[in-house]
Picture 1 (cartoon, rainbow, N blue to C red):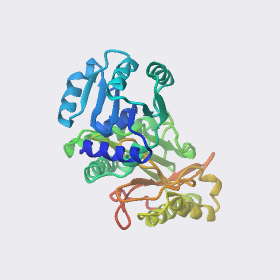
Picture 2 (cartoon, helix red, strand yellow; picture 1 turned 90 degrees about the vertical axis):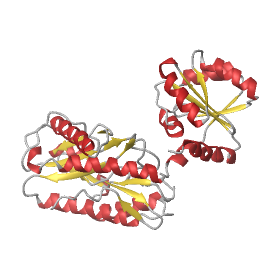
Picture 3 (cartoon, helix red, strand yellow; picture 1 turned 180 degrees about the vertical axis):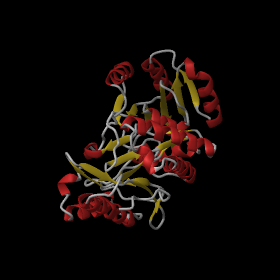
Picture 4 (cartoon, rainbow, N blue to C red; picture 1 turned 180 degrees about the horizontal axis):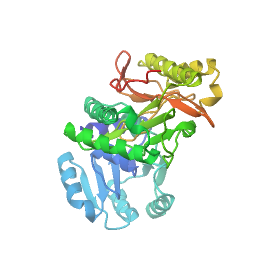
Length: 362
């Protein structure tokens, strides 16, 4: 990973906003900019220097990373406000931008009162860089997709029946770890899986419980893997036994919406226009009120990482973005269907990353 290049790209965006110094407090953003993980870490980004602050527990690793990347290590053995005050004096810093969505109010107040300079809410400079993945990130993401697919496919359809939703979730998590070992990577679940049987599938983000998966049930499974910090995310809806005409209609409507939205992916299209493609198909089938979430989201170091297809998102797609396409129809008391794929924006169109994961044969 070229962390120095990432920091330079962020600073380019800062300069356009007339910002010269940024305090980064979000651990995922710090991981992205430095490759360093810690439960207690800050980064101060300037044009010519990057300072990494952490405590004694992580000092050895932090010093090594700083040496490799020519960053300045500062031991967090005093209040951050005191350490920053010294840097402010030395480097004549007059203004610092901060991550308002992450920095704790108490920490911010201590910094503001202890430094006596201007503090300004940062713009989404880092997320703007993060949304476009480089070749290395794409290859790692493909591994995260592969182990999630392989783990799922090792479970035969009949094996789900008789398990509770919790047991099914645990089984899938274990299969993903095994799939990772087979290709030589450490794979873990990228989030708490959604396993929803029968009427529970009507809840978009249902939490698995003791409900037993039965014959003639629908089963919505939303899962993913994490490999080298990068996530995958996918959803399939199964049916055990002969599906009803209602299920067939809803499933095929969602599948058409999914495929049409994927086909619409190309560089330069707004994410709200991709959303509209899926939403129109579902609305014309009479289920507009039963599709209440966005058609997708970005994926990266976090499962929900950056912009994705939704009714109000005017961000235009560009090469290297990875988004999900996940239309769904949810009917309280009956159940729900969601089909989710991951799509990479290429120079001309969209590449389906979850291409090895078949849809249900309805």
